[in-house]
Image (cartoon, rainbow over all chains, first blue to last red; front, side):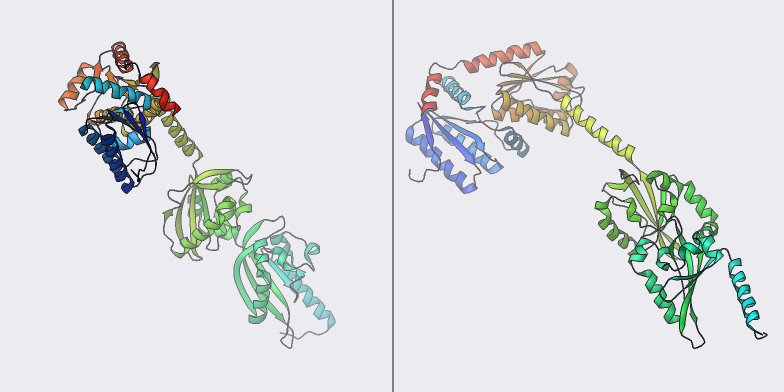
Length: 123
Length: 406
Protein backbone atom coordinates (compact mmCIF):
# COMPACT_ATOMS: atom_id res chain seq x y z
CA UNK A 1 0.00 0.00 0.00
CA UNK A 2 1.21 3.46 -0.85
CA UNK A 3 -0.26 5.18 2.18
CA UNK A 4 1.27 2.92 4.80
CA UNK A 5 1.67 4.95 7.93
CA UNK A 6 3.89 2.68 9.94
CA UNK A 7 6.42 0.01 9.02
CA UNK A 8 5.22 -3.54 9.63
CA UNK A 9 8.02 -5.95 10.45
CA UNK A 10 7.66 -9.60 9.64
CA UNK A 11 9.27 -12.28 11.82
CA UNK A 12 8.48 -15.70 10.36
CA UNK A 13 4.68 -15.86 10.44
CA UNK A 14 4.28 -13.04 12.94
CA UNK A 15 3.88 -9.33 12.15
CA UNK A 16 5.31 -6.73 14.50
CA UNK A 17 4.34 -3.05 14.50
CA UNK A 18 5.47 -0.33 16.83
CA UNK A 19 3.14 2.63 17.46
CA UNK A 20 4.99 5.81 18.39
CA UNK A 21 4.45 9.40 19.42
CA UNK A 22 1.11 11.10 19.86
CA UNK A 23 -1.55 9.79 17.52
CA UNK A 24 -4.64 11.74 16.52
CA UNK A 25 -7.95 10.01 15.96
CA UNK A 26 -7.76 10.02 12.13
CA UNK A 27 -4.29 8.48 12.16
CA UNK A 28 -5.44 5.78 14.57
CA UNK A 29 -8.28 4.86 12.21
CA UNK A 30 -5.90 4.66 9.24
CA UNK A 31 -3.52 2.48 11.25
CA UNK A 32 -6.46 0.22 12.10
CA UNK A 33 -7.15 -0.24 8.38
CA UNK A 34 -3.52 -0.75 7.53
CA UNK A 35 -3.04 -3.46 10.16
CA UNK A 36 -6.12 -5.48 9.23
CA UNK A 37 -5.15 -5.30 5.55
CA UNK A 38 -1.59 -6.35 6.39
CA UNK A 39 -2.79 -9.45 8.24
CA UNK A 40 -5.19 -10.38 5.43
CA UNK A 41 -2.58 -9.81 2.72
CA UNK A 42 0.25 -11.71 4.38
CA UNK A 43 -1.83 -14.45 5.95
CA UNK A 44 0.24 -14.04 9.09
CA UNK A 45 -0.62 -16.21 12.07
CA UNK A 46 -0.11 -13.48 14.63
CA UNK A 47 0.46 -9.81 15.20
CA UNK A 48 2.26 -7.97 18.00
CA UNK A 49 1.38 -4.32 18.53
CA UNK A 50 4.08 -2.57 20.53
CA UNK A 51 2.68 0.51 22.25
CA UNK A 52 5.69 1.26 24.49
CA UNK A 53 6.53 4.30 22.35
CA UNK A 54 3.07 5.87 22.57
CA UNK A 55 3.07 9.20 24.38
CA UNK A 56 -0.45 8.89 25.68
CA UNK A 57 -3.27 6.45 25.27
CA UNK A 58 -6.76 7.87 25.59
CA UNK A 59 -9.96 5.89 25.65
CA UNK A 60 -10.41 6.30 21.89
CA UNK A 61 -7.03 4.81 21.03
CA UNK A 62 -7.64 2.07 23.57
CA UNK A 63 -11.00 1.18 22.02
CA UNK A 64 -9.52 1.13 18.52
CA UNK A 65 -6.71 -1.14 19.72
CA UNK A 66 -9.24 -3.52 21.24
CA UNK A 67 -11.16 -3.37 17.93
CA UNK A 68 -8.06 -4.17 15.86
CA UNK A 69 -7.36 -7.20 18.04
CA UNK A 70 -10.93 -8.45 17.54
CA UNK A 71 -10.67 -7.94 13.76
CA UNK A 72 -7.37 -9.77 13.56
CA UNK A 73 -8.89 -12.70 15.43
CA UNK A 74 -11.74 -12.77 12.94
CA UNK A 75 -9.10 -12.93 10.22
CA UNK A 76 -7.84 -16.13 11.81
CA UNK A 77 -4.78 -14.75 13.55
CA UNK A 78 -3.88 -14.05 17.17
CA UNK A 79 -2.92 -10.58 18.33
CA UNK A 80 -1.26 -9.24 21.45
CA UNK A 81 -0.51 -5.77 22.75
CA UNK A 82 2.97 -5.41 24.23
CA UNK A 83 4.78 -2.73 26.17
CA UNK A 84 1.85 -0.98 27.86
CA UNK A 85 3.57 1.52 30.18
CA UNK A 86 2.59 1.83 33.87
CA UNK A 87 0.95 5.26 33.48
CA UNK A 88 -1.02 4.01 30.47
CA UNK A 89 -2.17 0.91 32.34
CA UNK A 90 -3.38 3.02 35.27
CA UNK A 91 -5.18 5.40 32.91
CA UNK A 92 -6.91 2.56 31.06
CA UNK A 93 -8.13 1.00 34.29
CA UNK A 94 -9.31 4.39 35.55
CA UNK A 95 -11.09 5.08 32.26
CA UNK A 96 -12.82 1.74 32.57
CA UNK A 97 -11.97 0.77 28.99
CA UNK A 98 -12.91 -2.92 28.69
CA UNK A 99 -9.65 -4.58 27.71
CA UNK A 100 -9.95 -7.73 29.77
CA UNK A 101 -10.06 -9.99 26.72
CA UNK A 102 -6.83 -8.57 25.32
CA UNK A 103 -3.64 -10.58 25.36
CA UNK A 104 -0.81 -8.48 26.68
CA UNK A 105 2.87 -8.99 27.33
CA UNK A 106 5.65 -6.96 28.87
CA UNK A 107 7.85 -6.88 25.76
CA UNK A 108 8.12 -8.20 22.22
CA UNK A 109 10.02 -11.34 23.24
CA UNK A 110 7.42 -12.36 25.77
CA UNK A 111 4.76 -11.35 23.27
CA UNK A 112 6.14 -13.77 20.69
CA UNK A 113 6.14 -16.56 23.27
CA UNK A 114 2.58 -15.66 24.20
CA UNK A 115 1.42 -15.86 20.56
CA UNK A 116 3.10 -19.27 20.15
CA UNK A 117 1.31 -20.49 23.27
CA UNK A 118 -2.03 -19.16 22.06
CA UNK A 119 -1.63 -20.82 18.72
CA UNK A 120 -0.78 -24.14 20.33
CA UNK A 121 -3.74 -24.05 22.68
CA UNK A 122 -5.98 -23.00 19.80
CA UNK A 123 -4.81 -25.78 17.56
CA UNK B 1 -1.66 97.77 82.10
CA UNK B 2 1.02 100.30 82.87
CA UNK B 3 3.22 101.21 79.96
CA UNK B 4 6.94 100.42 80.30
CA UNK B 5 8.64 103.25 82.17
CA UNK B 6 12.09 102.75 80.67
CA UNK B 7 14.75 100.35 79.48
CA UNK B 8 15.22 98.94 82.98
CA UNK B 9 11.54 98.08 83.13
CA UNK B 10 11.67 96.48 79.71
CA UNK B 11 14.57 94.23 80.70
CA UNK B 12 12.75 93.24 83.91
CA UNK B 13 9.63 92.37 81.95
CA UNK B 14 11.63 90.33 79.47
CA UNK B 15 13.23 88.37 82.32
CA UNK B 16 9.79 87.79 83.80
CA UNK B 17 8.49 86.46 80.54
CA UNK B 18 11.49 84.20 80.06
CA UNK B 19 11.15 82.89 83.61
CA UNK B 20 7.48 82.29 82.91
CA UNK B 21 8.36 80.40 79.75
CA UNK B 22 10.98 78.28 81.48
CA UNK B 23 8.53 77.44 84.24
CA UNK B 24 6.59 75.40 81.70
CA UNK B 25 8.36 72.04 81.77
CA UNK B 26 5.85 69.64 80.27
CA UNK B 27 5.66 71.57 76.99
CA UNK B 28 8.56 72.21 74.65
CA UNK B 29 8.39 75.87 73.68
CA UNK B 30 10.63 76.49 70.71
CA UNK B 31 11.16 79.63 68.69
CA UNK B 32 12.20 79.24 65.08
CA UNK B 33 13.54 81.82 62.67
CA UNK B 34 12.17 82.17 59.18
CA UNK B 35 14.56 79.54 57.85
CA UNK B 36 13.16 77.00 60.28
CA UNK B 37 16.26 77.06 62.51
CA UNK B 38 16.01 76.99 66.30
CA UNK B 39 16.26 80.52 67.68
CA UNK B 40 15.16 79.94 71.27
CA UNK B 41 15.04 76.77 73.34
CA UNK B 42 13.09 76.75 76.61
CA UNK B 43 13.74 74.65 79.69
CA UNK B 44 10.58 72.78 78.80
CA UNK B 45 12.00 72.05 75.35
CA UNK B 46 15.04 70.52 76.98
CA UNK B 47 12.85 68.44 79.29
CA UNK B 48 10.61 67.15 76.50
CA UNK B 49 13.14 66.79 73.67
CA UNK B 50 16.23 65.90 75.68
CA UNK B 51 18.60 68.28 73.89
CA UNK B 52 20.25 71.22 75.64
CA UNK B 53 19.97 74.70 74.13
CA UNK B 54 23.63 74.64 73.14
CA UNK B 55 23.08 71.52 71.07
CA UNK B 56 20.17 72.79 69.02
CA UNK B 57 20.41 76.57 68.70
CA UNK B 58 20.88 77.40 65.02
CA UNK B 59 20.05 73.85 63.95
CA UNK B 60 17.17 73.18 61.56
CA UNK B 61 13.98 72.08 63.34
CA UNK B 62 13.67 69.20 60.91
CA UNK B 63 16.10 67.29 63.15
CA UNK B 64 13.14 66.54 65.46
CA UNK B 65 11.24 64.78 62.69
CA UNK B 66 11.31 61.11 61.76
CA UNK B 67 13.41 60.23 58.72
CA UNK B 68 10.29 59.51 56.69
CA UNK B 69 8.59 62.78 57.62
CA UNK B 70 11.78 64.66 56.87
CA UNK B 71 12.05 62.98 53.50
CA UNK B 72 8.41 63.84 52.81
CA UNK B 73 9.16 67.52 53.48
CA UNK B 74 6.74 67.75 56.39
CA UNK B 75 8.86 70.32 58.27
CA UNK B 76 8.78 72.79 55.39
CA UNK B 77 5.10 72.18 54.84
CA UNK B 78 4.27 72.97 58.48
CA UNK B 79 6.30 76.16 58.44
CA UNK B 80 4.66 77.36 55.26
CA UNK B 81 1.18 76.61 56.59
CA UNK B 82 1.83 78.43 59.88
CA UNK B 83 3.19 81.48 58.07
CA UNK B 84 0.14 81.70 55.88
CA UNK B 85 -2.57 80.97 58.38
CA UNK B 86 -0.90 82.32 61.51
CA UNK B 87 -1.64 79.24 63.57
CA UNK B 88 -1.44 75.55 62.86
CA UNK B 89 -2.24 72.70 65.19
CA UNK B 90 -1.74 69.01 64.52
CA UNK B 91 -0.66 65.66 65.90
CA UNK B 92 2.34 63.76 64.59
CA UNK B 93 5.59 62.00 65.32
CA UNK B 94 8.63 63.66 66.82
CA UNK B 95 12.04 62.25 67.66
CA UNK B 96 13.79 63.16 70.88
CA UNK B 97 17.45 62.86 71.72
CA UNK B 98 18.62 59.28 71.30
CA UNK B 99 16.24 58.61 68.41
CA UNK B 100 13.18 57.74 70.48
CA UNK B 101 9.89 58.58 68.77
CA UNK B 102 6.85 59.89 70.52
CA UNK B 103 3.40 60.97 69.56
CA UNK B 104 3.32 64.73 69.79
CA UNK B 105 0.67 67.43 69.84
CA UNK B 106 2.13 70.44 68.08
CA UNK B 107 0.93 74.05 67.91
CA UNK B 108 2.75 76.37 65.54
CA UNK B 109 2.11 80.11 65.77
CA UNK B 110 3.56 82.88 63.62
CA UNK B 111 5.36 85.77 65.39
CA UNK B 112 4.73 89.15 63.77
CA UNK B 113 6.35 92.55 64.17
CA UNK B 114 4.44 95.86 64.58
CA UNK B 115 3.92 96.04 60.84
CA UNK B 116 2.38 92.55 60.83
CA UNK B 117 5.27 90.86 58.96
CA UNK B 118 6.15 87.37 60.12
CA UNK B 119 9.51 87.38 61.85
CA UNK B 120 9.55 83.86 63.23
CA UNK B 121 7.50 80.98 64.56
CA UNK B 122 6.71 79.56 67.96
CA UNK B 123 6.29 75.86 68.30
CA UNK B 124 4.75 74.27 71.35
CA UNK B 125 5.25 70.51 71.47
CA UNK B 126 3.52 68.24 73.93
CA UNK B 127 4.34 64.55 74.47
CA UNK B 128 1.02 62.74 74.16
CA UNK B 129 2.31 59.28 75.08
CA UNK B 130 1.53 59.41 78.78
CA UNK B 131 -1.81 61.02 78.06
CA UNK B 132 -2.78 58.32 75.59
CA UNK B 133 -1.73 55.61 77.97
CA UNK B 134 -3.68 57.18 80.78
CA UNK B 135 -6.63 57.73 78.51
CA UNK B 136 -7.94 54.20 78.74
CA UNK B 137 -6.29 51.97 81.32
CA UNK B 138 -8.78 49.20 80.58
CA UNK B 139 -7.80 49.25 76.92
CA UNK B 140 -4.11 49.17 77.86
CA UNK B 141 -4.75 46.32 80.27
CA UNK B 142 -6.58 44.36 77.60
CA UNK B 143 -3.80 44.97 75.15
CA UNK B 144 -1.12 43.77 77.52
CA UNK B 145 -3.06 40.72 78.66
CA UNK B 146 -3.65 39.45 75.11
CA UNK B 147 -1.75 36.22 74.40
CA UNK B 148 -0.85 37.45 70.91
CA UNK B 149 1.39 40.25 69.86
CA UNK B 150 -0.97 43.20 69.36
CA UNK B 151 0.00 45.99 67.01
CA UNK B 152 -2.23 49.01 66.50
CA UNK B 153 -1.62 50.72 63.20
CA UNK B 154 -2.91 54.10 62.00
CA UNK B 155 -4.24 54.55 58.49
CA UNK B 156 -0.88 55.94 57.36
CA UNK B 157 0.65 52.56 58.21
CA UNK B 158 2.50 53.83 61.28
CA UNK B 159 2.56 51.75 64.43
CA UNK B 160 0.65 53.60 67.14
CA UNK B 161 0.70 51.11 69.98
CA UNK B 162 2.20 47.71 70.71
CA UNK B 163 2.09 45.36 73.68
CA UNK B 164 4.91 43.59 75.49
CA UNK B 165 4.34 40.39 73.49
CA UNK B 166 5.17 42.29 70.32
CA UNK B 167 8.49 43.46 71.80
CA UNK B 168 9.34 39.88 72.70
CA UNK B 169 8.21 38.32 69.43
CA UNK B 170 10.03 40.73 67.13
CA UNK B 171 12.95 41.62 69.39
CA UNK B 172 12.48 45.40 69.26
CA UNK B 173 12.20 47.85 72.09
CA UNK B 174 8.77 49.41 72.13
CA UNK B 175 10.08 52.88 71.42
CA UNK B 176 11.82 51.57 68.29
CA UNK B 177 8.47 50.42 66.91
CA UNK B 178 6.17 53.31 67.77
CA UNK B 179 5.80 55.68 64.86
CA UNK B 180 7.53 53.40 62.37
CA UNK B 181 5.80 51.79 59.42
CA UNK B 182 4.28 48.39 60.12
CA UNK B 183 6.15 47.05 57.06
CA UNK B 184 9.35 46.97 59.15
CA UNK B 185 7.98 43.77 60.72
CA UNK B 186 7.59 42.08 57.33
CA UNK B 187 10.29 40.54 55.09
CA UNK B 188 11.16 43.02 52.30
CA UNK B 189 9.82 40.77 49.53
CA UNK B 190 6.27 41.06 50.91
CA UNK B 191 6.29 44.79 51.68
CA UNK B 192 4.86 46.09 48.40
CA UNK B 193 1.97 43.66 48.54
CA UNK B 194 1.36 44.48 52.17
CA UNK B 195 1.06 48.21 51.51
CA UNK B 196 -1.61 47.51 48.91
CA UNK B 197 -3.37 45.15 51.29
CA UNK B 198 -3.24 47.78 54.03
CA UNK B 199 -4.89 50.40 51.82
CA UNK B 200 -7.56 47.82 51.02
CA UNK B 201 -8.21 47.24 54.69
CA UNK B 202 -8.64 50.93 55.51
CA UNK B 203 -10.88 51.39 52.46
CA UNK B 204 -13.22 48.73 53.89
CA UNK B 205 -12.36 48.12 57.53
CA UNK B 206 -13.81 44.74 58.48
CA UNK B 207 -12.50 42.13 60.92
CA UNK B 208 -10.67 39.53 58.90
CA UNK B 209 -7.96 36.94 58.93
CA UNK B 210 -5.04 38.05 56.88
CA UNK B 211 -3.92 36.10 53.82
CA UNK B 212 -6.20 33.10 54.25
CA UNK B 213 -4.49 30.19 52.53
CA UNK B 214 -1.19 32.05 52.38
CA UNK B 215 1.86 31.52 54.50
CA UNK B 216 2.62 34.79 56.24
CA UNK B 217 6.05 35.69 57.57
CA UNK B 218 7.29 38.08 60.23
CA UNK B 219 10.72 39.69 60.32
CA UNK B 220 12.60 39.94 63.61
CA UNK B 221 15.05 42.69 64.44
CA UNK B 222 17.95 40.25 63.96
CA UNK B 223 16.78 39.60 60.39
CA UNK B 224 15.36 36.12 60.99
CA UNK B 225 11.94 35.26 59.62
CA UNK B 226 9.21 33.25 61.28
CA UNK B 227 5.76 32.07 60.19
CA UNK B 228 2.82 34.01 61.58
CA UNK B 229 -0.95 34.14 61.62
CA UNK B 230 -2.55 37.57 61.63
CA UNK B 231 -6.10 38.62 62.55
CA UNK B 232 -7.16 42.15 61.77
CA UNK B 233 -9.90 44.25 63.35
CA UNK B 234 -10.81 47.86 62.82
CA UNK B 235 -10.63 50.05 65.92
CA UNK B 236 -12.83 53.13 65.68
CA UNK B 237 -11.44 55.97 67.77
CA UNK B 238 -11.85 59.72 67.92
CA UNK B 239 -8.61 59.87 65.96
CA UNK B 240 -10.05 57.87 63.09
CA UNK B 241 -10.05 54.20 62.25
CA UNK B 242 -7.04 52.24 63.45
CA UNK B 243 -6.17 48.67 62.56
CA UNK B 244 -5.59 46.26 65.39
CA UNK B 245 -3.49 43.28 64.33
CA UNK B 246 -3.21 40.19 66.51
CA UNK B 247 -0.07 38.36 65.48
CA UNK B 248 0.66 34.80 66.48
CA UNK B 249 3.95 32.97 66.03
CA UNK B 250 3.01 29.67 64.37
CA UNK B 251 6.53 28.25 64.01
CA UNK B 252 5.66 25.23 66.12
CA UNK B 253 2.41 24.57 64.32
CA UNK B 254 4.00 24.81 60.89
CA UNK B 255 6.83 22.51 61.94
CA UNK B 256 4.30 20.11 63.36
CA UNK B 257 2.32 20.15 60.11
CA UNK B 258 5.42 19.57 58.06
CA UNK B 259 6.52 16.71 60.28
CA UNK B 260 3.10 15.12 59.97
CA UNK B 261 3.18 15.46 56.20
CA UNK B 262 6.65 13.97 56.01
CA UNK B 263 5.71 11.08 58.27
CA UNK B 264 2.59 10.46 56.24
CA UNK B 265 4.68 10.24 53.07
CA UNK B 266 7.19 7.96 54.73
CA UNK B 267 4.43 5.67 55.91
CA UNK B 268 3.04 5.67 52.38
CA UNK B 269 6.42 4.70 50.99
CA UNK B 270 7.02 2.04 53.59
CA UNK B 271 3.58 0.57 53.28
CA UNK B 272 3.76 -0.30 49.60
CA UNK B 273 7.04 -2.07 48.90
CA UNK B 274 7.10 -4.53 46.02
CA UNK B 275 9.79 -7.12 46.64
CA UNK B 276 11.39 -9.24 43.98
CA UNK B 277 11.21 -12.73 45.52
CA UNK B 278 12.29 -14.70 42.48
CA UNK B 279 13.44 -14.10 38.96
CA UNK B 280 10.45 -12.43 37.23
CA UNK B 281 8.30 -12.78 40.39
CA UNK B 282 7.33 -9.82 42.58
CA UNK B 283 5.63 -10.01 45.95
CA UNK B 284 3.52 -7.16 47.29
CA UNK B 285 2.66 -7.51 50.97
CA UNK B 286 -0.35 -5.25 51.56
CA UNK B 287 -0.51 -4.22 55.20
CA UNK B 288 -3.12 -2.03 56.83
CA UNK B 289 -6.11 -0.24 55.47
CA UNK B 290 -6.14 0.56 51.78
CA UNK B 291 -7.60 4.00 51.07
CA UNK B 292 -7.70 5.65 47.65
CA UNK B 293 -4.47 7.59 48.10
CA UNK B 294 -2.58 4.53 49.27
CA UNK B 295 -4.10 2.30 46.61
CA UNK B 296 -3.06 4.76 43.89
CA UNK B 297 0.48 4.84 45.22
CA UNK B 298 0.54 1.08 45.58
CA UNK B 299 -0.59 0.59 41.99
CA UNK B 300 1.91 3.09 40.65
CA UNK B 301 4.80 1.69 42.69
CA UNK B 302 4.01 -1.86 41.62
CA UNK B 303 3.61 -1.09 37.92
CA UNK B 304 6.89 0.81 37.75
CA UNK B 305 8.58 -2.04 39.55
CA UNK B 306 7.10 -4.40 36.95
CA UNK B 307 8.41 -2.21 34.13
CA UNK B 308 11.80 -2.09 35.81
CA UNK B 309 12.17 -5.81 36.56
CA UNK B 310 10.01 -7.13 33.68
CA UNK B 311 8.40 -9.43 36.22
CA UNK B 312 5.79 -11.75 34.76
CA UNK B 313 4.02 -12.71 37.95
CA UNK B 314 3.08 -10.64 40.99
CA UNK B 315 1.86 -12.11 44.28
CA UNK B 316 -0.50 -9.93 46.36
CA UNK B 317 -0.19 -10.97 50.00
CA UNK B 318 -3.27 -9.51 51.70
CA UNK B 319 -2.92 -11.34 55.03
CA UNK B 320 -2.05 -7.97 56.59
CA UNK B 321 -5.24 -6.23 55.47
CA UNK B 322 -7.66 -6.12 58.43
CA UNK B 323 -10.88 -5.79 56.41
CA UNK B 324 -11.76 -6.00 52.78
CA UNK B 325 -14.70 -3.86 51.83
CA UNK B 326 -16.02 -3.10 48.35
CA UNK B 327 -13.76 -0.10 47.95
CA UNK B 328 -10.60 -1.92 49.00
CA UNK B 329 -11.50 -4.82 46.71
CA UNK B 330 -12.03 -2.41 43.82
CA UNK B 331 -8.65 -0.82 44.42
CA UNK B 332 -7.01 -4.24 44.54
CA UNK B 333 -8.73 -5.51 41.41
CA UNK B 334 -7.86 -2.29 39.60
CA UNK B 335 -4.22 -2.92 40.37
CA UNK B 336 -4.53 -6.51 39.15
CA UNK B 337 -6.14 -5.28 35.91
CA UNK B 338 -3.44 -2.68 35.32
CA UNK B 339 -0.75 -5.30 35.89
CA UNK B 340 -2.56 -7.62 33.47
CA UNK B 341 -2.59 -4.89 30.82
CA UNK B 342 1.16 -4.72 31.10
CA UNK B 343 1.29 -8.47 30.64
CA UNK B 344 1.88 -9.57 34.20
CA UNK B 345 -0.23 -12.24 35.89
CA UNK B 346 -1.40 -11.82 39.49
CA UNK B 347 -1.82 -14.32 42.31
CA UNK B 348 -3.66 -13.53 45.52
CA UNK B 349 -2.53 -15.04 48.79
CA UNK B 350 -3.21 -14.79 52.51
CA UNK B 351 -6.99 -14.54 52.17
CA UNK B 352 -8.45 -15.27 55.60
CA UNK B 353 -11.77 -17.13 55.98
CA UNK B 354 -13.59 -14.02 57.22
CA UNK B 355 -12.14 -12.05 54.28
CA UNK B 356 -13.32 -14.71 51.85
CA UNK B 357 -16.80 -14.64 53.41
CA UNK B 358 -16.95 -10.86 53.26
CA UNK B 359 -15.81 -10.77 49.63
CA UNK B 360 -18.41 -13.27 48.50
CA UNK B 361 -21.16 -11.60 50.53
CA UNK B 362 -20.21 -8.25 48.99
CA UNK B 363 -20.48 -9.83 45.56
CA UNK B 364 -16.87 -9.05 44.70
CA UNK B 365 -15.94 -10.98 41.60
CA UNK B 366 -12.24 -11.69 41.46
CA UNK B 367 -12.60 -13.00 37.91
CA UNK B 368 -9.60 -14.89 36.58
CA UNK B 369 -7.52 -13.99 39.63
CA UNK B 370 -6.00 -17.08 41.21
CA UNK B 371 -5.64 -17.42 44.96
CA UNK B 372 -3.43 -19.49 47.27
CA UNK B 373 -3.54 -19.72 51.04
CA UNK B 374 0.13 -19.19 51.80
CA UNK B 375 2.96 -17.30 50.23
CA UNK B 376 4.80 -20.60 49.66
CA UNK B 377 1.94 -22.04 47.63
CA UNK B 378 1.60 -18.79 45.74
CA UNK B 379 5.28 -18.84 44.85
CA UNK B 380 4.95 -22.46 43.64
CA UNK B 381 2.08 -21.41 41.40
CA UNK B 382 4.10 -18.45 40.15
CA UNK B 383 6.98 -20.73 39.16
CA UNK B 384 4.56 -23.07 37.40
CA UNK B 385 3.14 -20.15 35.42
CA UNK B 386 6.63 -19.02 34.51
CA UNK B 387 7.54 -22.51 33.35
CA UNK B 388 4.42 -22.62 31.16
CA UNK B 389 5.27 -19.26 29.67
CA UNK B 390 8.88 -20.22 29.08
CA UNK B 391 7.80 -23.42 27.33
CA UNK B 392 7.93 -21.88 23.92
CA UNK B 393 8.57 -24.04 20.92
CA UNK B 394 12.11 -24.17 19.76
CA UNK B 395 12.55 -21.53 17.18
CA UNK B 396 11.35 -18.40 18.95
CA UNK B 397 14.88 -17.61 20.03
CA UNK B 398 16.09 -18.08 16.49
CA UNK B 399 13.17 -16.10 15.15
CA UNK B 400 14.23 -13.22 17.36
CA UNK B 401 17.64 -13.34 15.75
CA UNK B 402 16.65 -12.12 12.26
CA UNK B 403 14.31 -9.57 13.80
CA UNK B 404 17.15 -8.08 15.79
CA UNK B 405 19.49 -8.16 12.79
CA UNK B 406 16.99 -6.86 10.26
